Figure: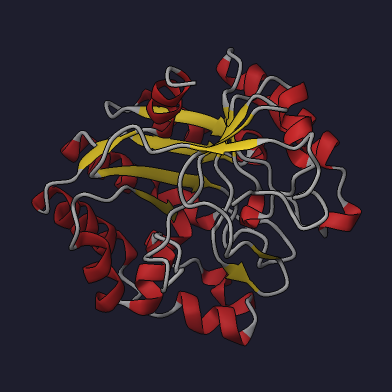
Length: 287
C-alpha cells in the first residue's frame, strides 16, 4: 500500500517502500508542544503550558526519552517552555511542528514549513530533521516542500479515518521510504488493524481501560504514543469548545496520572523506549 492518494497511486514517478521498525517492543513517546486544544479553538491560548514542569519531573524520574514536536509559535509566546524542556535531565529531541487555524485550502504549506523551519533554526541553532503536520493532515504534495527544506523524516500520518480531515485507513502502519523525496514517513500507530484508534493519551482518556489494555498486552509490537499538555490538564478554555469536544476533553480528567500509569504499564510489560530520531537513523542505515 502507499501513502499516496488515489490520484497518484498509478503515477510511476511516485515510489515508496515499506520498511519494518528497527526494533520490536519499543514505545516512541512523542509530545506535540502546542496551543491549547490545537486547532479546536479559533484563538490560541497557552494555559496548559504552565504545567510543563510536571512533565519534566515525570521524565527525569523515569529517564524515558521524548521526541517533542514544537509549534514554533510557542517559541515566540512562551520561549521559557522550550528552554525548560531542552535543559531538563531527560533526553528530549525537538522537531518543528507548524500549526495553523486556516483551512488547508487557505494555507500556504510552503510558507508554513519555511517559517517554522527558520524559527526553529533561530531558537535551537541547528537544522531540524523531522516534521509533524497539525491534525495529521499531510498530503503527498507536502513532502516536496519538506524535501526542499532538508527534512529527513515526517511523523504525521494517522492510518485511520478522521471525518472532515482525511481517510488514511489504507496507509501503512510501518515506516515508509519515499525515494522521490528522500523522506521517511514514521506514522502514528493504531490499536489494531480492526480497531484503527490512534495510540495516544487523548484516546486513552476517551476510551479508558479497554484501550490501555490493548496497548500494553503485547510487548512485541511498536507503539508511537503521543500526548499534548492539554491531555494532562484541562485548560479553562475547554468551555469554549464545541459540545462534542468539550465532552471528550472532560472525560477521565486525570491525564497526568494516566500518562504516568501508561508509562509504568509499558515498562512492566517489557517494552523499551526510544526516540523517533533514533528510529530514523537506524532506518537510514538499511536503505
